[in-house]
Length: 291
Length: 309
Image (cartoon, rainbow over all chains, first blue to last red; front, side, top):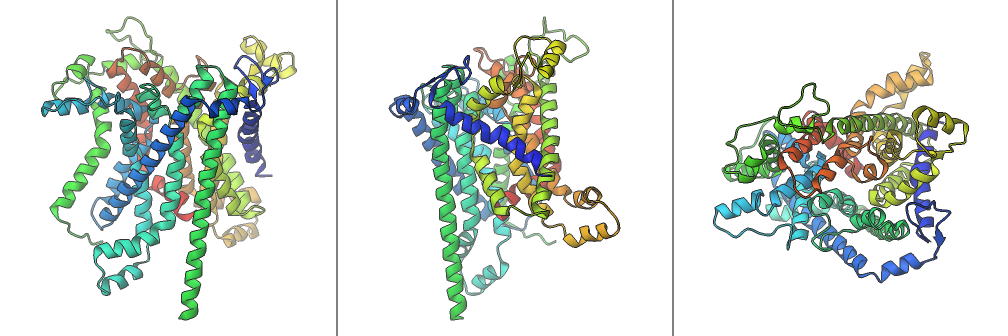
């Protein structure tokens, strides 16, 4: 009985719309029609999209963006966590300041970076010029890189905080033992800390990867997908197809492609985690039997 | 507690990191107090005459006096701010109440394991708002309507005016509904991990003393899971407050939220940097305040998600 409101809302506002979307993706549908009036076209939307170079490009952009962002954030975030895992004064203040970027609205983040990247007014180019360098065309030629930098700024703290929490919950005894056996700092990191953090790191990476596919507002405000299609990620393309080109059917088909892609990624990550857990459990059992 | 001494290079690194994390925010804060002339010529970063003119322009529709530099009030920021506030607060409260009930039921009268809940959470988290855009737009405009010939729909239409059917799109409740649905799984997930820790014997003791099920829930369980509630509230509020895409599809002229306003002003050709930074700053202030006062809860919420799950 307590569950009923939650179940009803979820069914009505998540499951039903998703089903509706799948249904709509088989139709030639524009916003002024109801779904019943739209013509049924079978798989036409999916096939058109599959051969559509613009869609392929934005898929490529999305994949590049997501992989680069997650990889860079993992390296920087975990690196910082390993470096800052010390008993120092003011750690909590540091963490507080680090969370700020992710709490602020993506729209505002986009706004800040658009200002800083501005070719004449922006902070970066002014700085470069005051040191006698050429200004860089941040949002022109290097738009994708600029978007990646902004995202790294916003989300590295997420990985940092999670890996710091993981580090601090590691069993002290293992580290003590390693230190007594004379392991160097590097050996400790590579052979003990990283393997023990692995489960958390995988989940974190998965969450970030999923979120990286959802990034839309920052890029929308910064570049509006341009120049050309160079930063038009799939999420942005969906919303433009729906609102500017008024082709809801195609947008729905696109959403389905994105959803399937994400589903595959999630399931793959889940499978990997399970496999690793199984292997770890087997190892533990072997050690017990031997000992 | 003993603190270790570190070498100076380490502190230099810390300062650099803090500068990188907070720098852009401080920069925006500073710019929101500058005139456009100062931003564009921008001789030096910190030497300028602060002015609140940008904020006056942004808030002109709720100010009690008329700012001198304005001819007419084009930016309806105040209204959007109130819309944002209503939507974010109502959806946070609703999500918490419904989520709390569901989480309690899941823990105490188990018929679904924690695995199911975390799987659902992950699945819902996986769905990008952009994917929901099309169906939600279609449904809210066409299906979730009260027929204008019908009893309730007719009554609403007569009271509030307007043509056609009464639909969810363009109302506060339409936007609130989708936010509640989007945040529910996450909230249930977090609250569940807190409710599990409440010892069952405590509840039984209260029941023996004659407390009904509702009294047990409100007097025993609720106070014990306060940190979890705080974390869940902050996360829900943040999403509802910051969201742009779905709000832009569902709102009309009168229910615009702040992010929509900012994006609309941004895409115009000649950007007034000072004013736009002021609006951005106003949008950013509530989350910043939360972060400064409740960072511990936020970190709990984030780590409860990944480390324990």
